Image 1 (spheres, rainbow, N blue to C red):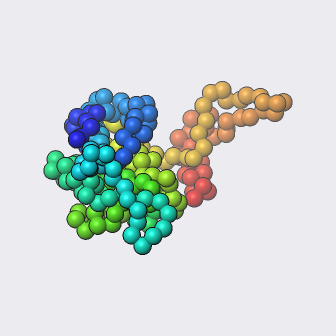
Image 2 (cartoon, rainbow, N blue to C red):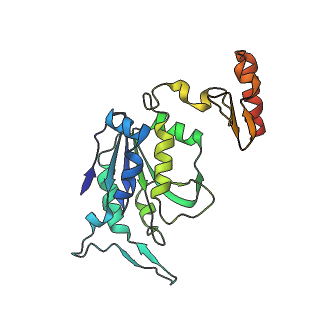
Image 3 (cartoon, rainbow, N blue to C red):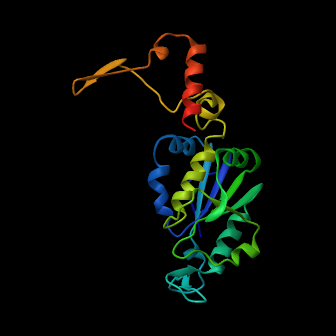
Length: 226
């Protein structure tokens, strides 16, 4: 069964997950919420439990070779991915794993430009039976050199990053920090405030209106933060 929250217009994200409700809060706020409502992006969920072939909807078993924890069975995941893939146009299947290819802004931009559909497989427990990767051509992707309890948070990171490159999601492409000189430090009014007897000021260069000087200051700050 496909849980459809929003309908496709530009980019569709197909999420294979045991916990679709984990996404509702993040996608229900701010920029992504507006992008979904404006039909700039769409998100569909496929729960492997809905594709289980037993009355208990069980989808996990102990690992061959021993070890702690449970492994998600291949067949329910295969059926879920096949359902998502049947709706494809230009699709990429992403297998989330700490040992995968590092996800970067450049990778996200490539996904946004090259594909109409991203199918993201979220693991849980000890992971998903590796035979799924023999059935489908997947790209193994990592959002960082660490291990999470599940792939859902990593999927949110990828969807957020990719969505920024889809026209209309940010409202103005000038909002992309990557396309302009942006500093890691930003300031707003008031120009001066006091806290515990000490005054805190906005850097003078930002108040002068000299945009060449401001760009130079921002570029220097950006370089120093790397």
